[in-house]
Image 1 (tube, rainbow over the protein chains, first blue to last red):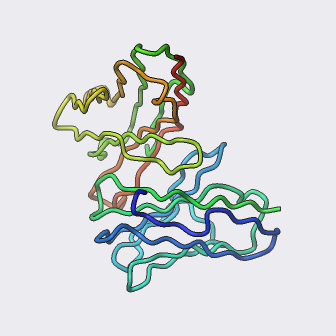
Image 2 (image 1 turned 135 degrees about the vertical axis):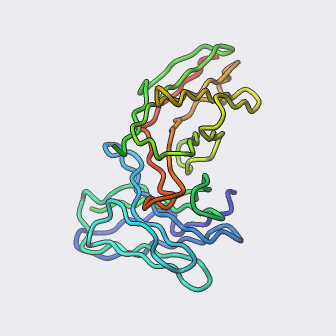
Length: 112
Length: 115
């Protein structure tokens, strides 16, 4: 157990729907990062939050949004889902920016 | 300039052999270079990392070699074991600037160690 908890582990939904992925970082970690992993694109950075504030954005679609709550857990919201959004979504956390971080086990999203 | 290029895409090694995976980067602002190991159905796990002020770092059977002038770094797995069979990712980041710790990953190397 890495200490980073992601729920749900698997999600199957239809095109056009909206889903929410949840992440609880390791105790004491203030930074939360979201990554998308697909076979053709590899691990792609989506967005980072630090202590509740958005810090950096990567290749995150406008249909996707995220937030980090006061208790430091984070949620990634994916809307108007398309078949191409099917992927593994990982959350990671770190104590501070700039160090290696710890990944959760991911949420496998399948859009049908 | 943000790319990290990793090779080979796949690697087959006999038990006891040496596995070598190479990465090259372009962004000279990168100052932290971790390697991650990923097993099927799991998230990437930090294996070993290096900063550019040293040329080599060793932890057990795993060694990172770093060549700052060539902007290359590599992972060596000595005495490779079947349990090392996994996908390995190199990555790079910089603490400063606007990247704020975003990791840029290589495309991954699938390592298979035959018994």
